[in-house]
Length: 147
Image (tube, rainbow, N blue to C red; front, top):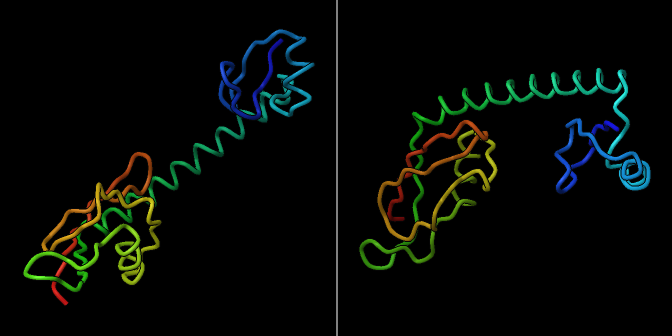
């Protein structure tokens, strides 16, 4: 029996895929737990439409991310921080701090999209990678200066 998976099922397949399973497994497990639905001609058409809509949305989001990447590439951010001695900071600058500065510049970017290997703990110029989309990432120049 062919079914369309509604949710990911371990060792069977991912959501949205059409898989062949035994009829008893589908009737007794997949259907009652709302993990799958029968693969009828109507449901297959609906699945194709949903896939097309999702791919269009994915392309639109990717295009918007490319535009943001172009705007971010020419951007240089400055963060002033208290220092102890010449180079070492009292605290550290993390992804949240960078997200706040980006928000002040007009970019709504989640702190989880900022890929810092470790917090910044000294003065200097840093290249900070920002993942805007699974296929699009940008680099922002960050200047950490003495307050």
